[in-house]
Length: 135
Image (cartoon, rainbow, N blue to C red; front, top):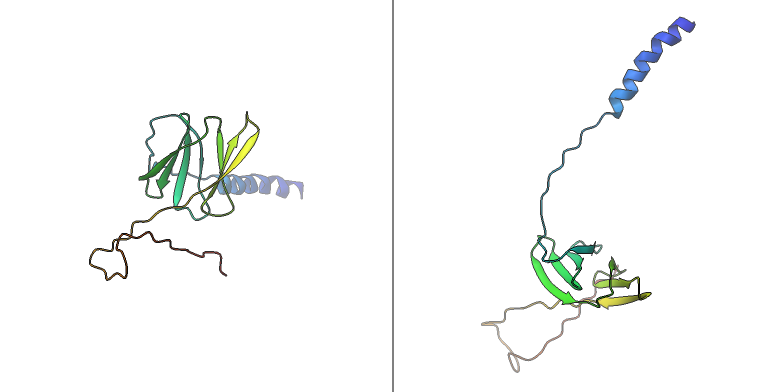
């Protein structure tokens, strides 16, 4: 009986070792070029933007395709960023100053109206409210 157990042990060990072996294929698919050292980054739940905090107190906003959308200047003490509960909200963390700022971002979209019928002035300011929290 003990001989059978000793014969089965190497077979079981080979089976376990062969199942644990795995390969990983890794490749860089995108690089975000910065002019300063990155301190932190955050991606909101919808994944549309990539926020990068740099050492020169700038918040770089990249589109998901890697193109720079905008650059905002933040307080020099901000050393970390975290995405907020809403896709347009970001927490700016100043560890040394012991404070957290809540930043609401409103993304302005250009809507081409050339040749469109208008009522009133064509260059009048317009606000569009988008309700994204309906279930």
